Length: 448
Figure 1 (cartoon, helix red, strand yellow):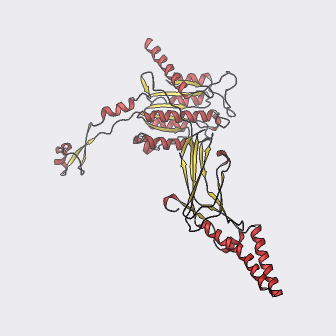
Figure 2 (cartoon, one colour; figure 1 turned 135 degrees about the vertical axis):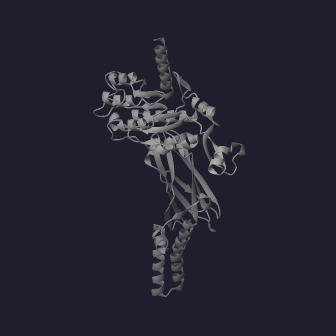
Figure 3 (cartoon, helix red, strand yellow; figure 1 turned 90 degrees about the vertical axis):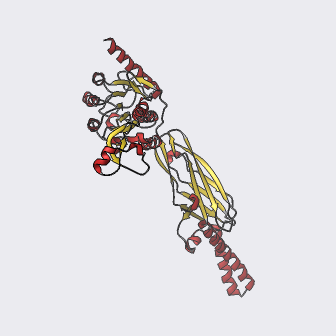
């Protein structure tokens, strides 16, 4: 890579490569020149020899010029933005610079892009003056989340006479990340527990600045008013009082990725809705000061155990959101058959709010999910809805069924708030529905 983000072309060198790039016209001129030279030697005609030398030299000179030009052309690619939601467009800008002292010939550009992003863009550029540059751009979009490489860029250089054409590929490429669509959620309260109303941030501010009884060694810049004299006398060195770390409200989003719970693919599938819903909830809670983590049925969590123990992704909203969205952009189905691994993770560290996006459940799996409620401060489950009560409204995996009434009853008896989500439903709508349902349960409990 050259300075300023420019990427120099790469390819084998030597006159053999240059001669291999001769076009039919160039080869014809070269053959005519050699034939004229042989005839001039046999006939003793010097004028014919001069013509033959001219015919043979022209394609050779063009090949040398083109070979040199392609090594003196650099390119750069700009991707704006590098992370886009499904269905949104990203703009790719290509810049080609001529860093040689000679003008280029006709340039043909082709950027490699995955099929899901559309056809390969092709451009034809006129000659570029010495030290000049040309810029072109194109757009890409995808309805499927994932990470897609852009490049490498292919460059075909031709001389003005059409004697020689050489193609070479630029080494570097960029990565476009297509993340799940995130829907803005309203700040609602589910009963006495706040969901997305900012209580986590208020709680953090309430205890910030309180002193911990455990002292630590003095560091340069510490306020001398925080010196703990009793510990200083005890340890024989200057000690100061610690500041207690602020408490952050926590939220765990459980995403069921079992292959047996879903069937079908594409933007309209139930699994993609669950992934998009998880992304919406994670973003919503992060924006309101919660420390969040993503947990799958296989027991994997983002951030990892160390990050979750130290406050998780709440340390930086932008960085946390990027990490979670990158994970959700490539998450796929698991081969697991139950949710026991996730239950074990929550048993060790299951405090805080729990929001689950579940696929098809039988009664035994529902009991496993019900046990996850024990250590959480609140539990909310989104289940796919069977519209006709006979046939599921979305494709369901072989051997799996939409959560039966018994499974839903098990979750409700364990204290879960269960919301049925129709296919293609707005996440904001089901979020409000969860608020209304929980509020009704709390009011009914108080009346009793």
